[in-house]
Image 1 (cartoon, rainbow, N blue to C red):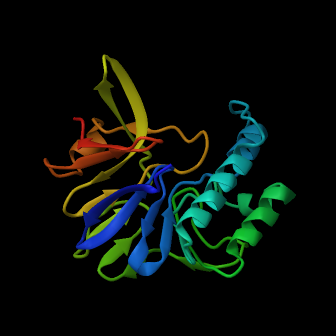
Image 2: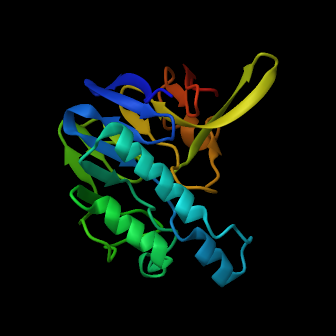
Image 3: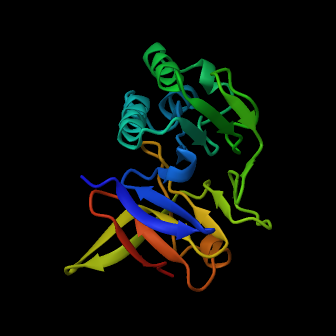
Length: 221
């Protein structure tokens, strides 16, 4: 299986991974957004749809595999890593131990999201955003002088392929912004033709669909 699809953004060589993670080889950095860990716990507490209890395990298995495949020694979690404030302390013991094992020997940075505003008790740095020249990282796109990488919207795109329509999570990018898909299991998504994207992305924006066979297309509008 290929690692992913290489592309250029902000003058940097990046790789969109098949799983929805982003790898920046020059910085030895793996970026993931919207893990939404603890979603099953939160919904069980507040009467939402019942989710399988292993959703966190699947997300962490995927993350461990991406770390092995890329050899990344730095990890940036780009917000909404947890589905609600305080869920970092309510994770199953297995998931918490797995997080700590993945952090061992790596620089780990948590960027705040709208679901998890503020520090979490797991190790690592906790930041509102991160400027790693020439790129700016934050949870929600808002624009700045530097090329901006964000998450939050859980983008997905649909295209016709061999007579059938397929929908997959996707990366969206133009000359100013790169928006990552949600990395977590059972996170849902927002179609690329939604008003939030058509008003945010440039007319020439591109979409990179995730999955074993990655596809890059003009952003469906």
